[in-house]
Image 1: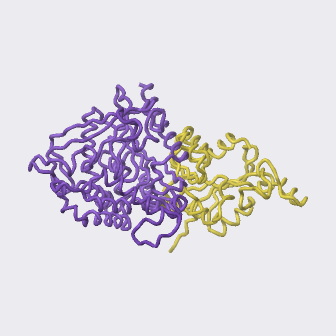
Image 2: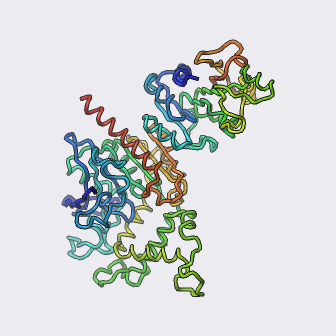
Image 3: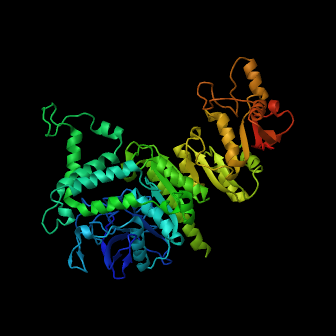
Length: 381
Length: 199
């Protein structure tokens, strides 16, 4: 039987001071939980989501059990690597997103107008602070693990720095200590595609009853290319033609890869928000915990007390293994607990969402180890 | 070779409470033993997926790396002991890795199969590559890309100005100190960086 997920929301009226200096007077966070919080409230695992995902990380919705499967359902659930029979798993939709937490499509209570482009710029640290309030409200003072892939991995790393006494284990997958220039460049192409769409209206397109779909589509197409590896793209599409033969057209779809990218773009533009895309890519760009420490990552991670599992994928060029190794080196320099695996999967950045057996079993063993220690502590007392 | 007895034999060389880096740690059995019995901490380095998984299962922290790419991840003298147990014979850059071992560790412990052990000599005299308990492979399927002898290692250490603090052979999990080059299937060296005094 599938795990049934129930989305919830929690409202916060205490203003949240943001990295930019702005204040968010009030906000709500959408979230889901799976499994049971034990009596001692020490079995909670927080999952942080990446760019286009939501708080719906596992299971299905009762009304729609065929589609709507959580984005990391292969990893989280009963008897899955992060076993919801053992752990209480929480996933929170990030502020500024478009899946239920307060974002640019909502009403700004101070002006009674839709936020639009005026929604404050949020950072990874702001998300972590907002998440911590929700965790606290659930009565949890310490997380046994924080886990995420890509931008979610950045949040997990940030948790270990912002709240070093509240994180026991930190699982950082296919991530980086900051974005390099090439990575920021891809984000900028995506943002420009959105901003230059005539339907964007400077970010205030809601009032105009239009959606800058063309920009969103191109943004997604560019992004999607960077999530795949050359090999996978070649084996999946190669030079296959859509209609078997060349039509000598510059604008129609000729190659299968074009069709695939257009389809991905189309799908994305149906559910994602343009302002959210700008906000989240900016949060990615800004994340750089070493910056305040003369760009010395070792110094930056000195604060962290968590035990780490860092995983990268050999064919991931958007968040390459070399970037994960920087995190590992900084942890080793600080004599922190760390295990690092470099999975030889062919799927590029996307691999972190897929079911490579070596990867899945590694995470399973790691969480089994966490659970064993948790039980040992409980029995000992 | 009895694995557990061999582990105990090597473990005796590691001072209690040491911070240890085990290069080519395999399934993590030695590190696990050192953690439990000698209160050591540290990491293993391993390239093989199944071994990385085995380490995680036995609560040994492991860094998945190809040793042939060097030890740039580890700072100078950042470990009390760097172990290189049965690893040397698999490496392309064995000489560089030896120097890296004592750059990263204050103490290096290296062991490898001694090709000059007398049964191997007899086999070569008979015109065939040896196949023994210690070197159980045929010449065409061995994972060892090089073989060396106890005495050869002394020469390499000398060439690189590496100080040998102790050396002996191991046979049946016991130290062999008399004629180890002839009598022991396994060579063990305890090494450190030679400090050159500049005036």
